[in-house]
Every structure is written in C-alpha cells, then in structure tokens.
Length: 489
Image (spheres, rainbow, N blue to C red):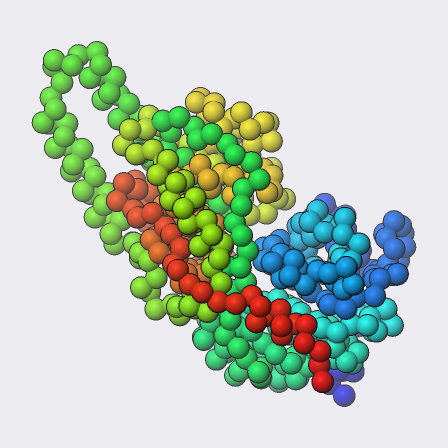
C-alpha cells in the first residue's frame, strides 16, 4: 500500500513540476539530464537516445549522484568488471554523467545512463530481469529504485552511507517514510559509527561500518606542470557562492605583504649600507608574531576534534603505495620565505559559475587570466590570479600548490574532499562547516579549520601552518566486492 501511495505522490509532483522542469532543461547545466530523467519517452528531447537500458541486461547496477561519487566508484567498478558481467552505472547530474561516459563508454560491458525519475522505473523492469545486485551510494535514497530491484529478486546495498549532524533532524521528520524505504535495503555500509547510529534510528538494518569509499581511489595526476619559480602557489578549490570574495580579500591582504617585502628587498639592494637590519628584523618578528597569534585562535590541527576515527576501517592503499612520492613532492616545495610573490589558482566548484567568477575578478585590482587560455599562464609572472575554468585539472594544481584553501565549508555546504590536497602534502585550510566530510578529515593529519572572519589572518600566518598528510590505515575492498557479488538466497 505504501509504495502505491508513494507512486501517486510522485506522479502528482511530476505533473506540478513538468513546466518548470521544461524551462530548466533549456539551461546548459540541465539540457541533457532533465529530458533523460523526467521525459524519457518524449523522443523530441532525446532523439539520439537508445532508451534506458535498451539492448542491455545488467547484472550489477551502481548508482551515484555526481562527479565525486562516480569517481569514488572507480576501484569497485574495476574489481567487478569481467567480460561476462554487465554493469549499469547511473547518475543524476551532468558532471557525473560526463565523467562516467569518458571513463567507461568504450567498455561494452558497462552502460552509463541517467537515472529515470521514480514513476518511470517500473516501465523498465523487464529490461532488468537479470539484475543480481543494486548498489547505491551515500544519500541517494529513492524508494522506487530499491523497490524495483527487490521486486526483481536482486539484493540491495547502500554503501558509503552517511547522515550528517546538520541534516539528521530533517530526516527524523520523515522517519515513517525512511522505515519503509530501509525495509527494501538488505545491507548498509556506513562511513562512521555516528552515521551507523543515525541510520539505525531511521530504520536501517544490517549496518556495517566501512568508512569512506574515496579512500579506496588512487590519487593521480593527468599532467605534470612545473611549479612557478619563486612563487607561493595557493589553490582555492571547490569554492561556492560567497567564498570567492572571502578568498580574494584574504589573498589581497597577502599581496600587500608581498609588496612591502619586495619594497624592503629593493631598498636593500639600492642602499645596503644604510639598511637597518635590527630594526627591520624586529618589525618583521612582531608582524609574524601577530599573525601567528591570530592563527592559533582558529587552528584545529590534525583530527583531535571529536570526529570519529574511521580511518582504521579504511583501505588507504592509495596513500601507502605513493607515500614516498608524496614525501618527494613535499620536499620539492620551496621555502615560502624565499618567494617573491603569491599566485592564486581559483577553482569554483560548479562549472556554470565560471563566467560569474570571472566577472567578480574584474572588480579586484588583481591581474587575472583563465586557465583555458593555455597552461602557460601558470608561468606568467605578471598574473596574480588564474581562474581554473575547466574540470579534471585540480589534482594537477594540487601537485604544485604550497597552500590549499578548500571551499564548501566557509558556507554551510558541508565541505569537500580533503584527501587529495593532503596527499600532496599541502598546507590545508578549510572552514568549520565540514559536516559532510567528517569521516575524511578524520583520516588526515595537519589541517587547519577557521571561521570565515579568520581566513585572512590564517593565510597571513601561513609560515606557521603544518603540512597535511594521510594517516596510516588498513582495510579491505574485497569485503565490499564479496558483499556485492554474493547472490541473494
């Protein structure tokens, strides 16, 4: 009875939202995802589409929301892929779909699709008759999705499951709904003990604490860029609306310090005999002491912050296998006291905001360029800021970074993945709103969290900040693969 009521409510919601969805589908961000998900039978919207799972009978169905979640599935897909096992990979966002397509479109046993909206899934049940397992990541809790898989006799798993402290009260308002939903999920692999407790209170059962899937993914670079000579390289990564202004204000303050230092050096070169070393040294020490005292108030180094230490459950083989490489990369970073100036690489989280951020940069007295003008902009000493207006380059920039300011936590977005900047041994700064990334921050050492109002003083005291790094941990991808491939009784 509950599933029929849910279907009726979803149908009513679709009718009410059809026109707004059609309007949104005219925007580049949704041009492909909305027609495929909400109007799958209207061929005018997708004339080249072969239809969901047409001529393809999956044995394993993996579903993830967007880019980061699709990327976290890479080691699982590699372990599951065989010439005789068909894998269906679905997503709900354009960035996730593009990554999945570029990674797996050439593989005949892997099909990439957008996930159809709930009311359309039953129409495709006959194409899924060979389904053995449905694996869904994180908080993609679609009732019809799990119900359809269970009706086909497939086992159902929720992996990398999490319920943040911030979102838990909202989930509790709909406990009756989630109890029904979790009745269709056979096994849950939670990120932390706290997630496990919250999920159990919502009705989940057969819960195993596994940790975060992102720790299973090897961290690699696609290109190697030479580090800009004698420059302090700062990467502001995955920034959200409102965070670019904070970063640019803090960076502008740092540039003023650069200018004063350069003026002192120039004065020394022109008049070395008249230069007062003692006076200048005293002023410099006082200035650095002030910055460091301000930074100490905001620093929360390592993971001594009460977050659950889920690293012991994780397979950190990516860190272990490349530990020496990371040390070498860290050793190549130049002492910031010898650098002539600072360079900011600004990477907004969402591609549709690239143009907006470029417009924002024009309001600051900073020389800027877009990365898509060519990688040579990294070596242009006349530039202060480079807008990273493309995807897939962030790790390449982390590799040459001295400092990373990780966005999504100076606004209440939940934070972003700190593993990649920690892998490269950068000085890692983030905001305090990391409620979606607590398990990952528990797996690294040497990071700094600060309030938005403290970002400037923290950046100015960068000399005193620690380098971030992985903690050592062991766990087993094989446990998860065995759970997925074990046929349901």
